[in-house]
Amino acid sequence: MYYRDQHCHSEFSFDSNEKFENYLKQVQGDIITTEHMDLGYIHSDGKEEDIDIDYEKYCKVIDEHNSNHSQKILKGIEIGYTSKNRDRIIDTLEKRNYDIQLLSIHQINGIDGMSVKSKDIDQRKFLTDYYGNMIDAVNNFKDYDVLTHIDYAIRLNKFDTKNFDIVDEYLSFVFKELINDEKALELNTRSVYQYENLEYYTFALKKYVKMKGKLVSIGSDAHFENYYRFNFEKAYKLLESLGVKYLALFENRKMKTIRVEDI
Ligand SMILES: [Zn+2]
Ligand SMILES: [Zn+2]
Image 1: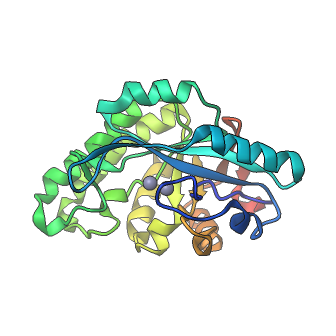
Image 2: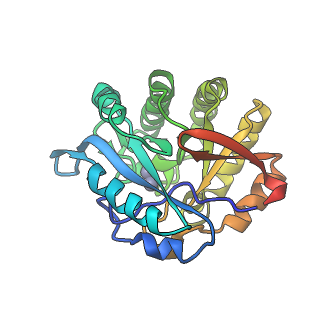
Image 3: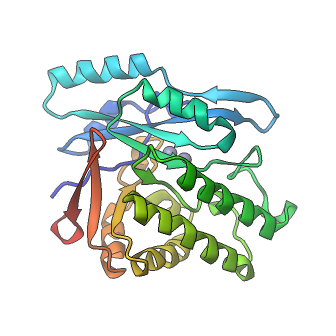
């Protein structure tokens, strides 16, 4: 059974130049892109910007493609959540129709989590703030389907394992809310196999399964074609070994589940 890569970016995102065609040619089935929307994003020079796509153009190009091809492109968005911009995010989304909406935490105290250097900061405070933002997001924003890359702020920085009590404690709150709301948790394959956070994801997914979490989504977070479906075969095996039985697939904001063993 075909499982779609549910997290990838095209030239409609500010940080990708990839064409739909280069993803389409790699698979027989439909594809989906999940383009960035980070309202009130603060750049490293302190400048604030509403990062967003040209939604009208995105729809026009995709609708045109879909009317001429049997291999379809579905529409998606990756929402960079900050509590300060919550109402504007909700207003923007109300006017749009997507097949899937991803929820992401990119910014911590006005800094991109991947720009932070762990040696320059108080690690315990940083982790508390990062996971605190994640809890705030899942508690106060419900218009999403998948919580993405739960290691974003620790993709580049390896934190002292003695601080992982924070991760453990805060992920309990995050997962409780996810499970209660029937949202899916993402296995981000670039996080696991490019940024080498296999150990962290193994820990987190075990915890999620133990808490009776059932819904997992797999996404590569590709920004160019070489990373599309990055290590998906390994990811299926990893999930099976951790007791994950179902993967969630989204279309028109409706979820269907497929068994990992049927893929
Ligand atoms: Zn992201
Ligand atoms: Zn992404």
